[in-house]
Amino acid sequence: MASLKEVKSKINGVKKTKQITRAMNMVASSKLRGAQAAMTAFHPYAEKFAEVLGNIAGRSADETSPLLVAREEVKNVHIVLLTSDRGLCGGFNTKLIETAEEFAQEKVKGGINVSFTNFGKKGRDWCRKQKFTIVEEYLGIVGGKFGFNVASTAAQKLINGFLSEQYDEVHIVYSRFLSMANQPPFVKQLLPIPVIEAAEKAEENKEEKGYMPEHICEPSPEELLNAMLPRNVAIQLYNALLETSTSEHASRMRAMDNATKACDDMIESLTLAYNKARQQAITMELMDIVGGAEALRG
Amino acid sequence: MAENIKIEIVTPEKYVVSESAQIVMAPGALGEFGVLAGHTPFLTSLETGKVRYRDAGGNEKLVFVSGGFAEALPDRVTILAESAEPEEDIDYERAKAAYDRAKKRLEERRENLDNARAQAALQRALTRMKIAEDGGSLH
Image (cartoon, rainbow over all chains, first blue to last red):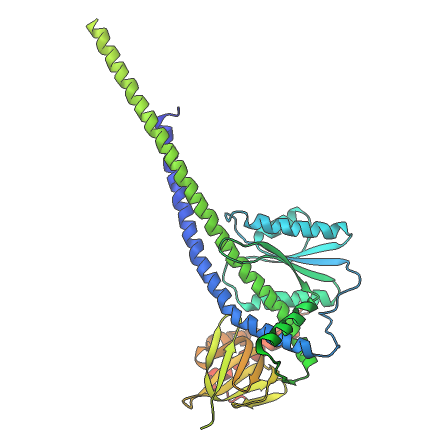
């Protein structure tokens, strides 16, 4: 049985930890609200853009943009890995990194070169440890406040890399935000832009409205499409950044909630141990006194 | 009075404008164009510049836009822009600073300079400044 003092100081320690985890929980929940608001604010733009893009993609002639053409031989694959900068958010980063690792290993086995763009320190550190080539790293973005310009600059770099045949495919690994309790890691192809998607959206559009407005396009539909496709990449990236940020805060909130609960449990069991130890000490003292009195009476 | 048309200006970060207008003028890729209610479906990319519209009360309003598209339908105009700010939200000092920065970068002629990007930045800053200064009598 541990001494009274030891147990007491342990209880105090756990109480302090609990204060910290609870504070972190509250910080995460307020940041989560901000991130969710940014996601909501982005929806109208993304939806409208997808609608217009689907519309044009359905109509523009066979003349395809280089961003849509899949390369026959894929030698270099580029992975954009989104993780958080900071830890203490449960299995959030582990899940993302595992997904990226699996994906990268598969490519490496096929004799394909893999390089990375990292958003977030955790993923970058992992890439360094694994000795992967890191082309670009962005810290302080995920989980913080960022504008669309971050995504559009980064997307432009990816597109340049793709067009100069530095990469033959670009994929993104990020965390989707499905609900507060469910944020699965996800791999998505950014470049070449999957064609089916555009066609599907056009289909949906048709059904919703019953007709497709024939727009007059200025300049030609092909030129418009060519202008819109790079922006589409930026939009995908921005969306992934928003979802990952939101997921990070949700994950941290949950992790800190669990930690606070664990602290409560620990405090309870420690208090029990403390009371027991105290009781025992009192009993011992009593025994001593009784023993002493007995001896005196002799 | 003619029917009003709904104007929506949306950026990835927020809804900038959503109201009804009598007429909307926007800087299309092939020249400025105006839209009234009942316009034929029309789609165009936009230059960096200003969108002008007259709201239901007849007040002229100016909005800075850059990097965008406009879709006109008979009952509404939707402008998707990478950035957009109503006249009163333009930060003149910031635009001025951006202008100086871009100008300096262009003058330095460094080797790895992304010329197109610096030019675009210059253009954006200049347009913002003009709009803030004198209601954007740019054209």
